[in-house]
Image (cartoon, rainbow, N blue to C red; front, side, top):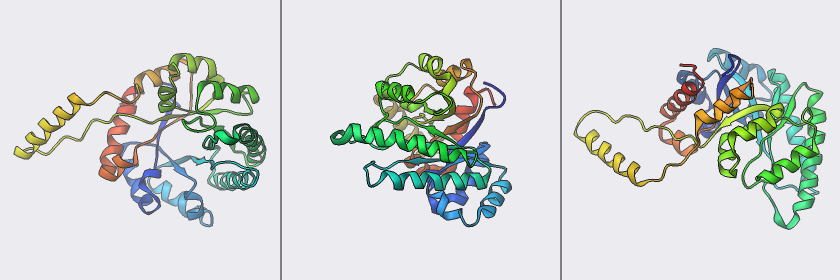
Length: 280
């Protein structure tokens, strides 16, 4: 992987109340950056300097904010666009360059109307965010209006590559049945951000003793009967390397993993991704 590629962690699963702990957990794990959801903006929009000091103290970079659009209608599209613009202002204040937008949930009863509203929102948000030096990225996601191969192709045909870069999730590719190598070859000029979700993390080693042996045996039995799921991290990152990707890779942990063992799950996720990137 290119030397300019670094690992970030999405801190959304820690929640607003756990934000300070999240910074410590992800930095101790080895991550160089964080990504947050839109809920971070109202917490710090009037005290950006405080957030900057917090990140500097942990030697972390705010990479981007990821905002998922709500179902679009004629009445809600303008409001959603203004929310995106507010995030762009905040990112500008933080010195960040990327705003990731997740398409709205698909609404079959008004599919064409929602598609038109979404593409218009992307165009307008991209134009206005550029005034702050911020690039808008689209992040295809299952269950959204850009949740399949054909919908992704339709979106990319509607925008030139320079006008709409992509934030690509390994989990999305796996769930949508898109071959990794072929995808990166086809869309390499649009790649602006990468995600690793649906990673299968190795369980923490149990403490030594009789109880640990029982837990280990139980874990083995459970593993043997459970189907193997998740993404192939090495294959995804190898394809990114072949496509000459340079930039951030954000690891997205499941909320259940973070709630169970925040620091441990962050550490295991970092190790898995870093090994695939030859960072360790």
